[in-house]
Image 1 (tube, helix red, strand yellow):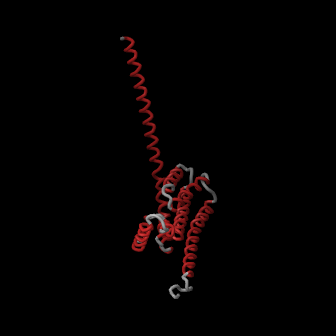
Image 2 (tube, helix red, strand yellow):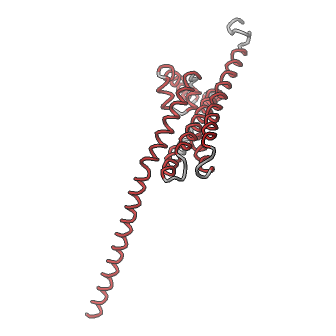
Image 3 (tube, rainbow, N blue to C red):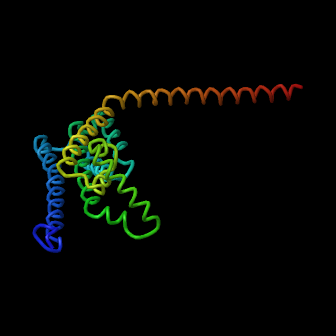
Length: 228
């Protein structure tokens, strides 16, 4: 009866733990939109279609939630559009960072709240799934920073990554990610597109020349056949 402080059945520590998780996730998810609001208030308006920023935010949040793929190409494309003065680079970076931070917090909270129970639920290969979670716990205990950086956010939650460790890493890594890819697309994207456009023009000229040569050769062959 005395194994759990605050209650004989152990429910009090669990409830406190759940409340801490909810508070941490709520605070983290509220931080990014608040900073985004400050940035937009300083700029007073969007430069470019607002729907582009909404799509960028959705893709970045999904990527950091754990859905593979959409964030990086959308952020890279937004950087290229900013270089062509169709979007604002600063807003692109802040929107991507805020959305990635919120997505990372959401994934961590979902994994910490329900992910472990889902992964270890009764069913096929349960022993293997339990062993995988245990192995993940060992990795996150020994190398928490590296594990957080190299795995999806929900895995950090499943393997019980602590809030005070996960949240700062999530915020900083999201910032580095947003700046690196967004500014990279801004600086590198237009020259690459120009090269492809030049190559496209060159290939078009070559194809036209080849078609003309084939037609001329066929006309010449037919004329010789008639003479013969």
